[in-house]
Image (cartoon, rainbow, N blue to C red):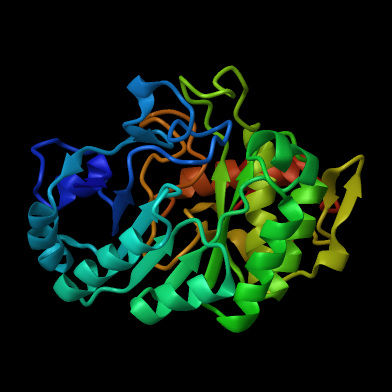
Length: 328
């Protein structure tokens, strides 16, 4: 058996569910219970009734023959990439290598993998098997919080991520979660280091999920999240450098850009869309339809761009406040 996100199953015709938005990547999930016990995730030591969820998404099970047939036709349904995600298996890498082989047999679409990797050798093994991009997730950017929320050593995980990035340049990515108690300076300092190492970044907003240890915690404030999105985009596009950033008590206060330059650089709205691998849009992974949107799964309209830019110009020192009516 293999699990698919509810949106992927609907997009591929495996369920009759009507979706508000469809994914452009087919998301598959390997495994039923993780050996890890991350405080934000129901896949570890969470309550059994929420094991069907990862993020806000439900993941129904299907047989491999059902999935193979659907994956073979995925590109005709608007799918441009396959993403195989995995809990930490007790059997190690073997189940994943078998699943990668199956997926590559039935599809020529680029394949991403997000999984527990222990060494450069394992990273090489999955890429040689057909994985185009490999995600080694950091998630928590503060070392003390990492130990408390994920367990294990932040330093060892970061060293592995950087060594794999050096061995497989341009093919390694990671996930960063905003809203787990870290400061904005901590998140951006690590992000800048990873960008210099050619690591692709996928930014997530923390989502409190029932049945997890953090179910009573709060998601990040939207203005904070917009600052992180905008800064990561500007760093990635080399519009600014990390040395241009100013912080006060851990909070980002300035990018050393004028309001006009900031608005011009972000006017297309790309900074506020889902980040990560190409063609990955993750509809409603962080939010409910009709509620506050952290990561837009589609191009923003003019009103949405104005709202995002207004938050930035209203909370950063940009050489003069730019009211929403003057933006764009």
